[in-house]
Length: 452
Ligand code: NAD
Image 1 (cartoon, rainbow, N blue to C red):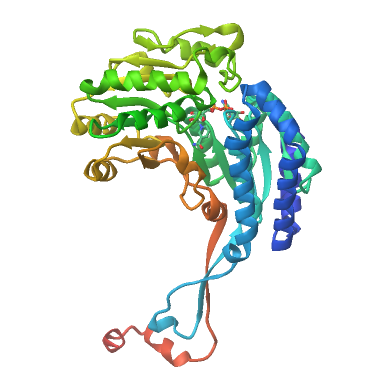
Image 2: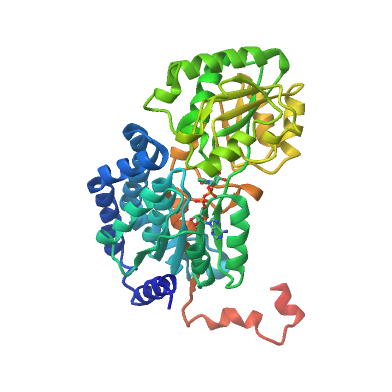
C-alpha cells in the first residue's frame, strides 16, 4: 500500500469513529492549529523567506493575520454555524420540525498552491476542521521549505484525523486516485481540470480555487494618483504572484502617460530606485517560472523596469505600454511583476474586452462615477468585483471568496468555508398523529381531493 493510500485509509478510519463530530473536539483542533502558527512562527517565516524571499512582516500581513482571524472566527461562531437551521413552515408543516442540519462530509483532500502556501493550504483546513471532517493535506512541493514546516502539523493536530502528505506531482496523482468526500484544490486551471476529472470518477464534489487574468479598468474620471498607488501595491506584492493581482490595465490612451508616470513614482516610493537590493521586494518562485515570465515580454514595449537576474530569480517591477490584445503577455495569466497597459476607447470597449475573455477571479474598476461602477457590476461577471481598491476583499470573511467559470467553482472564508465543507441535510420530523390530514394525498386521487 502506498503512503498516500495509507494516509487516506487512516483518515477515513479516524473519521468513522465519529471522533471529529463533537464541537469541543473541533474547537480544540482549531486552537491547536493556532498554536502551530504561534509556536512555529520562526520556522514559517524562515521557510517563506527561502521559498519566496518574503519579509517577516509580509508573512505576518499576508499569510498569518488572515489565517488567525479565520480560526478565531470559526472558534467563536462554531456553535451557531453547526446548529440546526430552522426554515419557514407552511400550512402542511405547521406542527412539524423542519430544519437544515449541517453535517460533516467525511474525508476532505486539500491540495495547496505555492504563492501564499500557508494561507491557501491552511485556510481551507480551518473550514474542514470546523465542519467536522477528517482531512488529507497536500502542500505544494514548489514551495518546498514551507511544505516541510507543514509536516510539523502532526505534532499539533490529531495525527490520525488530519494527515499531511508531502511530495510532487506523482504523489498528488496517487492521492487523486483515492476516494474522497470533497476535494479542495487551489492552483492553475489546467491542473484544476485534471482534479475535476479524477473527482468525477468517484462523484466527489470539488472546490476549485483557480486563477486567470484579472482586469483593472481605470476610468479617466478618477483620482489617477490614488488609483495607481492601490494598483501598484496590488500588482507587485509577492512579486506579482498573487491569484487576485491585477493582471493588466485597461484605460483610454489619453490617460496612459499619466498612469505610467504615477505607477513609476509609486514603485520608487514602495521599493526604492533599486528593488533588487530592497529587503521587501520578493523573488520569482523558481527558474521555470522566471523563464516563463520573461518570455511573456516578447514583442511588447517595456516602459518601466524590464531588468532581471536569472541567478536570483529577480524580475524588476515592470510596466508595458500600448500592448496589443493579441500579444504574448495577453495569452495567459502573468503571475509575475509585469503590468501591461491596453488602451481602449472608453467604458463600452473595456466591458466588451472583458466579456470576450474567460470570467476572471477578480475585476477591478477605478472611477469616481457610481454609474461606471454599477455598469461594470451589471454588464460583466467575475469571482469578485472591487471598485477603487485591489486585493482587500480577500480579508473580509463575510464575503465568499472564489471564482466563476474558468476562475473556479465553489467558495470559502468564514461561514462559507463551513458550509462549503458541510452537507446541508434537509430534515423533516413529523408526528404519527393527525393522520386524517393525509387522506387527501392517498389514492384514490379523486377530483374532490384536488379541490380541497
Ligand atoms: P502548484 O504548481 O503548486 O500546483 C498546485 C498543486 O497541484 C500542487 O500541490 C501540485 O502538487 C499539484 N499538481 C501540479 N501539477 C499536477 C498534475 N499534473 N497532476 C496532479 N496534481 C498536480 O501551483 P500553481 O498551479 O502554479 O499555482 C499558481 C496558480 O494558482 C495560479 O493560476 C493562481 O492564480 C492560482 N491560485 C489561485 C488561488 C485562489 O485562491 N483562487 C490562490 C493561489 C493561487
